[in-house]
Image (tube, rainbow, N blue to C red; front, side, top):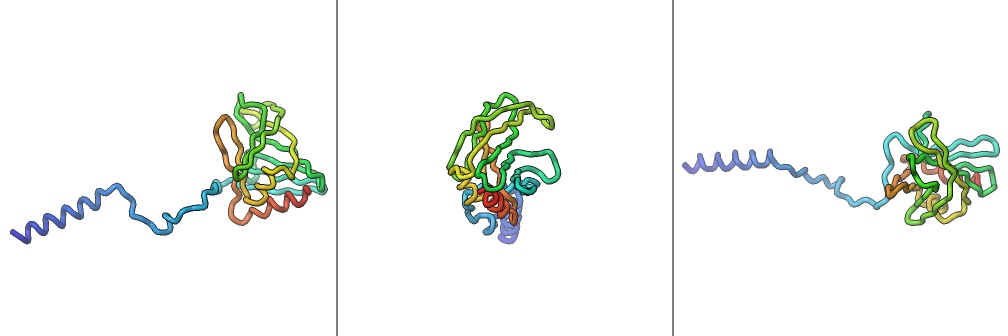
Length: 168
């Protein structure tokens, strides 16, 4: 009788363990992160230089999928911003980096490659939001209460510094 009870108890324990809905703890997965946003697969910051002009664009490689673009002429410190937006968005580019924010009045026109708008604005490369971006490596764009973060993939963060050094 005692053996039968022990077998039933063992079988019940195994059955309950198999039905558990909790995931076993993985020590590597439970290490707290820094709180910084993480890169999105397939998206990155891309730098292109053409003589006296440079462009830093966040999107997907070799496509028209552009989320945010920064352009400048060498040494001017002036940026031309280009951002994608949803139809009906307010005519501004609202940028954040690590808590610093800035709103730029923008011109809006219908996008040719997606069902939305293309916003354009001007900014100064030495604005606090861009200097923070330069230090921490990510920007976010706010649209209608939604925050989209633009984080470089590992190994490509140096493109950000190279762009701002070119523009300064």
